[in-house]
Length: 458
Image 1 (tube, helix red, strand yellow):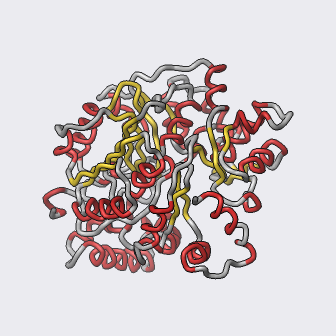
Image 2 (cartoon, one colour):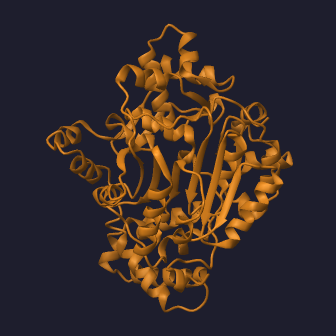
Image 3 (cartoon, helix red, strand yellow):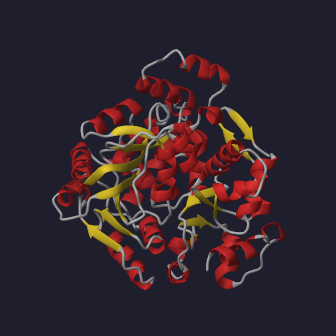
């Protein structure tokens, strides 16, 4: 489909990646953390990603959650075709992929979804497509279901919008496909910065951020992020108002770092926010301290509130897995409020126990005399830091999927991940990736990965 007809840059394909916060266990943990009952998955569930790209996340989740059915919807047929090939090679039978725009998807015969997720796409589409996006959710979300959306956020984008607007305007008059037009536009912006344009000097993205992004990101990311005709960053109150139109209420954040004031807010910030009683306005003001450019919000429809004793019991029943070898875990979390440190017996007990494989917090606590509340608090801190992750209670074979992933070529190897049998995936450093598939030597500092991968990838 032509970009000018759809209002979306579609002449470049998105990058391959796994998004951890989209997993049911992660969304369940987010809901429980804020006292909301998550969907009951014991007898099966349905999950859908809007704007799924290559559907990497849904493919991993389908392979590791045999009781679920996983749908992916994307505008670009080439994305869906590639996703179907990977799914077929991995022998995945519980995944359904649709090459549709959101308007076309609204009236399709689909299951009622317990989870609907979308990463970034809401900020990249035009208003008409956002309307269709909301209509799809309104029609296909089950009562008690969860919706998780990441989107470009204000005021975090305030200083950098000058770059996004300018580079898009310049690229609109350039020749060639989107990647070439983006490169040409960025070169012009850099010359303006070198000439001393004051507005560009105030943009952290232009002055320092682009260099780091080019090191970390695939070239396809840049035209998709910065050249979208409908691109927009939203204040949290705007997003909540739009979701309220379809009966959704805010639950919390899928980004556990942002979920707890004690992690991210200094004492003076918390004191100032305490003067604001209305929850939506408080969250808006909170963003003025955090200044985050991306929010990952969870919404619900008719979710049941859980009393604290039951909430704690359910949190203790959550199963966690390490995302790296135990010797490589760092017991600290950098945030805008400073460095949060949690190198203590409870945190080390959690990590030591999970070194043998996924376990619930209740099982871990049963092996120690440490207080359960301390175990829970430190598990949440470790999860916010990315050292551990909530996963499913079972184990599934990921051999076929990982073999299929290993054959994807250079487009995948720039940011490789492996599926883990407990129901998630982790990105690997290039040296670890080469060791896993090509038996390359591991540097001494990475040696613990050998045993870790053997344990978790069966």
